[in-house]
Image 1 (cartoon, helix red, strand yellow):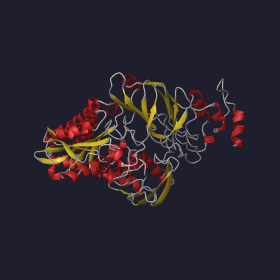
Image 2 (cartoon, one colour):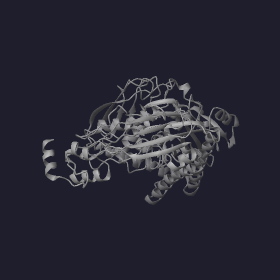
Image 3 (cartoon, helix red, strand yellow):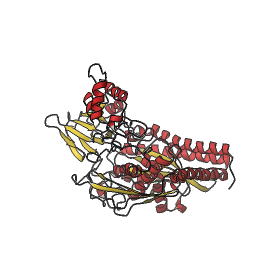
Image 4 (cartoon, helix red, strand yellow):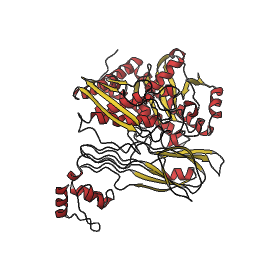
Length: 577
């Protein structure tokens, strides 16, 4: 393999990353549903011939990005690498292969150059409806209630559409036009990547590009190992819990991780976590693997683009039949929510040895709720997902971010939610309120980020689904920092008493009903009475912290009219706390 000069290496590496970014931008511009075009509930990546990650889009759902390699590899193994042909398009919605629920479809095209298989352009994206018991079955008790499972199959064979496959998809969806439109957008993104990669190969040669890719892998591995090597050797554990499995709402699910560091290698072991669940809160091996790798990446080399080299020092263990590695027949529609707990569980374990790098717990998950129904004006099925923005946990250096997406889905725009204007123009909904919640961030020397409240009014009858996590599990603080506000949703019927829900599916709501998603705040970091007095005063002025909380949690006495600090009363109060 030829040695590559630094200039060529830098140009090729950045070009490959640029291609991956171009893939997702192409798909987003071509997407039909809001899931792809606005929310960007998707990912795109370029893989090598062994399905290792060469480059991935900087936008998109982070959990998708990290799982693109094992998900695509599973599909290749099923079909057979020897059966790949130019201009093929392969799809699958089987969770056992893709690592996500049935609505998150893997689609990829092989990249051939001079009759040789070089790699793959791959994507994963949420399809609006795949014929489940309802559009978002958060109460499924088996995999068969969660929608059409398409085994890895060629949708296009040598560029020819296999209409039988398409018709199976169309006849099993409540929104076939939207699904087919988004499939074509995914294909457009992959074809963009395929074309750009083949042009790059023609410009530099296969040997040169291969050499650059191997150096990309080796460089990422070196940086990752250097960072792991700085962590003291040893074994650390942490435990937490998931609120419920979606069916048994009063039964929490134990989660446990053991992190072992030895030299420049790290092992993440979920032995001791709760068993596979009868509700849809079951994790899958592919996503557990990718979430664990992503957690290590965030701690070791967050500034570097991710590729296969970053994964080499990381070993992941999740016993078959546990909540993080459920069997093929288990319901798993909320597997993404399960995977989102992994990042902070690992952080919790490593805080003891990395106190300056681990943040407090965030506001939880996506605090998702959504609606589906039939549009009275068009007669067509519609569905949309709305997420209230959480607060992130504070860290050693700063306050947590206000009103943001959870780490597992935030990817420079991924999971950002639809715009209010687009939602109201497209669906029979009115957004009446979307604001940060005062006092929702955990108090601390550094304050947890604030969560938000999103209030939606239904303009026509619709069915609600909600999958709110961390409504019971704490948004823990660190080193004396306090917990953030928990998550929940409120249903306000037009005629009737309001009530609270966390997870629900298939709840029929009448026109005029209001639904409020309350997304909690992040945990605080450090003792609140050590927070700078001027920072507390500024928070009160900005509406982040109430005068009452300033006094009770921070020991700062502030006049509610002038916002002046009573220094003598503050000193006396803090000395007594």
